[in-house]
Image (tube, rainbow, N blue to C red):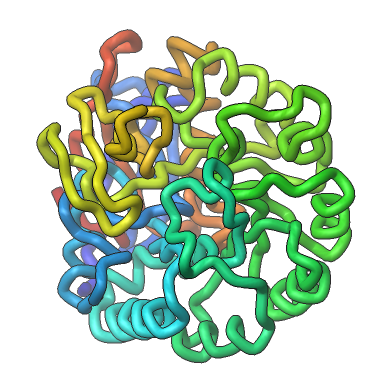
Length: 385
């Protein structure tokens, strides 16, 4: 991707509603000014998504993964305003995980646009709870205990790109495993678990700092006093990732959880899977097997109950109406949960500031419609829409 000359972008700042003019030079932001100019579109840093399994038919968790699929996924993410993301690999055999990690590494090495977007890799599992409910749509046959040696093989295959690992802290090996990963510069996230408070505390004491899609990857029915949610909500050392698509959590659940964690310890992810963006219908999916995608974006296991979600099908921008009109956040607060908040875990991306990468999204939203529309996206200062 070759640098571009200086340009001036106009929009409205989501935090203040004021007109904003951003000047770029090459791949970086050179200047930011507040001024009225008549442009009605909102302009923000590009969205940062820490959990993307696939989208628009491009699947990171299929039986095989090639470089073309990784690059096509990057291009599909740009169309929905995401300029930085973590390709996410779920529970599978070690051989499949290692092969996928190697492919993503090679895609970054061969394509500058992929390297610009992929800030690391999120490995979700295989060290999760094995029971139905907590396991979600992950393969029960491939669930296994944490292994430092296996992680080292992952990181070697990935060329150091593994940045987040999600695990359940119920395993006896958890504290030592967490310490090893933290020493290697990896963020450990708790998820797909029914661990008790002591097990959660031990993992956090060892260095775990995140909660993966908190409120999901859970049993449908839990003990009202003793469950894995309260300790994670109460511990200020944990930042919670939330899926704010209107399906994974009710507006009341999301509002209460955001209040408990505080916006400073919260962020939004999409948890997109390959079926996201496709037509409604029944599919065979790499995550969950037989699933049903509904017209409203609800993706469920096709098990006759419709109770268990099989990942998400709505891109990150769909969270804006949920957060603003249903939960009660301001537009600026909602956008921050999708940009600077997740950006803290990928080297400070997602910030509109001088000297930062010229990665932007311009979008239209009237404050009430069900879905904002991406109008333009810039990656490293270049329009890619």
